[in-house]
Amino acid sequence: MIDAGRFGRFAWRAFITSARCCFQRQTYPLVWTQMNIIGVRSVPVVMITGAFVGMLMAVQAYDQLAGMGLEEHLGVLINLSVVKELGPVLAAVMLAGRVGGALTAELGTMNVTEQIDAVRSMGTDPIRYLVAPRLLACLFLTPVLIIYADLMGVVGGALVSFLQLGINSRAYWTFSAHGVEMWDVGIGVAKGFFFGAAIAIISCYKGFSCKEGAHGVGQACTDAFVSSFISILALDFALAVIFKNIYLTFWPLKSIVG
Image 1 (spheres, rainbow, N blue to C red):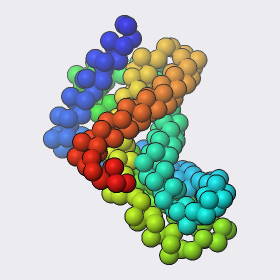
Image 2: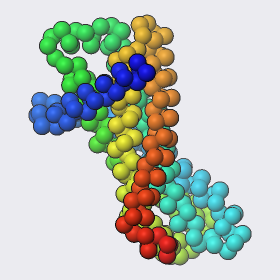
Image 3: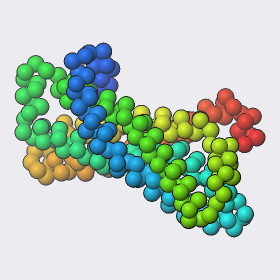
């Protein structure tokens, strides 16, 4: 309970400070720097992950659909799974491993070497200087990276379906267009804001509260990844239930017909 209270207070301060930093121009260079580290350098990993997810879905699902004579509907299954669930979750997990571990190690090292105390002693809020830029970068760029993962997943699944499995491309895209809606794409992108915030907050908190020594930093990195992974899965379940209820509330007849 004590750790939960500390984490809650840390998260509240981080969100409030980040909201204020959005209107302070002096923090923009820090945010741009973190965007380059967190977002730009993560693009290749996220895109490769998305591509292989789409290709794997095509190979695994083809036999089941072909046995029922529905192989031309393969695009609906691949694209819907990628944009709603697999793309956002796997992209967030990759970011938790790559970005979350780096953030925890960086801030943990600064904590162990008393650099955070030095920032505080100079009259600067370490939350504003160290946490807010990283939180804003994760918050803004995780949805963008999810879009890249979705795009590569769709392309990868289509290439395997056309070149290896011999599915008619016209029927593939026609059924996909009817089966996948903008609502489905929006759900995946919206999840990115929650996933990015969870990764940044957990990683920064673990870095700020890590124990002394190299062992403490390593343990903090491990805890950050495990906690981020569990949080991503829990948030994915909660958001899936919430978005489903919203859809059933505003489009009940359409969901019944579909």
